[in-house]
Image (cartoon, rainbow, N blue to C red; front, side, top):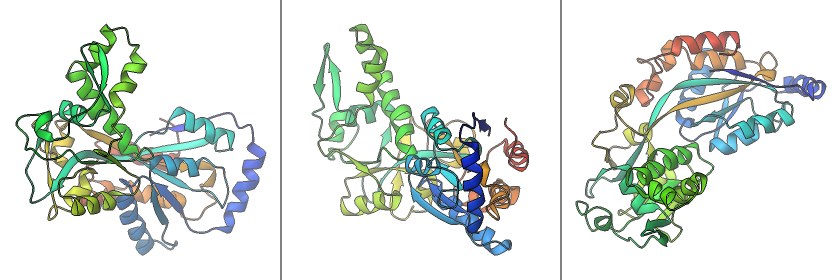
Length: 341
């Protein structure tokens, strides 16, 4: 966790807006659908254990939450943005332009990205290369980029069933999408040699990465802009579908879904904690420091969120599927002090 400090070009306006925030007495949180259930659990427990109103927690995706977070300082702006990826430099710059000049980054733990399908369908043992072959918009074949014409999974890998390729993946506003593109699609492009083949053919590195990660738009890959419940509903309607989920959501829906292995590893909290499962990522929330001491309960909520009894290995977040951060003690100290790393 770190505090991002930038030149306060609109400091006076920010202070006025922060004073206005005192008119609101309820912490406002929005962002990642992956972090949403964890934040909701903490918010409910906070409301039950403290003399502050229960925080309002909304979803919308990491990018959408950070966009709202960076709109400015004051009672009409977010206090906390949840994210399943780190805030980007461009987002920090937008925050600064709007007077959000100090941002506290809090890492709450780790999660895995899993690939799950209808519980009654065939099982899958994937590699990143399988997903690249199935979902890339184009393949690089004999020196040329050609449209992806694969339609069934056995065409991707002869060990797979002749099941139509139908994938439901998080939309671009979700932090999960970025991790999926980089750790699965791009990795698969590299593992299979297509990335290097493009470089050898004179394609520059940035273009090669873009071509690797561009997903097909012919209906085989469908962006899901809602949360994981929408993906689950799509699979219920089309049992050929395979969805991209956070591990915790899958673990709470094992009566409906079966999970695939990735590189031979079953996704579990233990495998993620050990570093064995290849598609995992840290989860975060971002605090608007100007609102601390102005919005009642904000500091207390942040400290409660990362307390041992909440985010530790024996807490309710771990029971829901969060992989506890081994450096949680450091995070607790930094949240309490508000100091940068």
